Image (tube, rainbow, N blue to C red):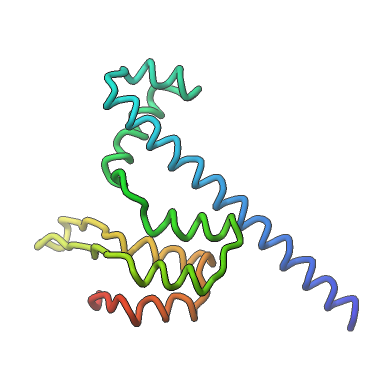
Length: 149
């Protein structure tokens, strides 16, 4: 019984470590996207940006497209990722998320016309991927009151 308990604690530690590493990786990608955007606004070509960031030019192209989507402000995803990496107080994280202004997914009129995701989706994805607990998500959702899908 004690051995099974130790093993479950070890598995939880390994899982937590993996979650933190994935969060770190995503934060690095976001930082690279923002750096590419700043360099582009500063007049650099995609080829120059690729050399500066040590990535391929096609990757820079994708980064610049992503930069348009995430904008310059801190996103809910970044708040959650940083709290995960830093081991921040979860109550403070919930308060911060509850205080943000969100956009919500906009659906085109036709069934096949697609949608434009809002920033609230980042919170939903974080909850689905284990970056937020169900309780944390419910507390934020109770304050934000997103529209029904």
